[in-house]
Length: 100
Image (cartoon, rainbow, N blue to C red):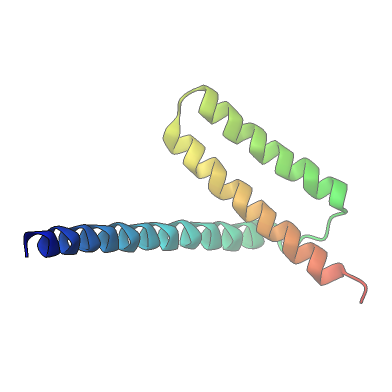
């Protein structure tokens, strides 16, 4: 019986950890969507060539690197959201402009 409760407690703790990870993931994805909307509000839909997109993405990655080197974790998190949002914008642009 003692073993049953031990295993049940482990199961419950694992479930709580998974639930917390899912909530964290939803919060992160929500921040990316908010950033994408902010980008569209500021710049409108963008349709760059792939190399221009890569330059924009590289600039954002560079800002994330700078924040990491400065050990600015809040800045790093903000920059990583921007990296993700630019990646999404790039994917949207490529899909929008693909020749079928």
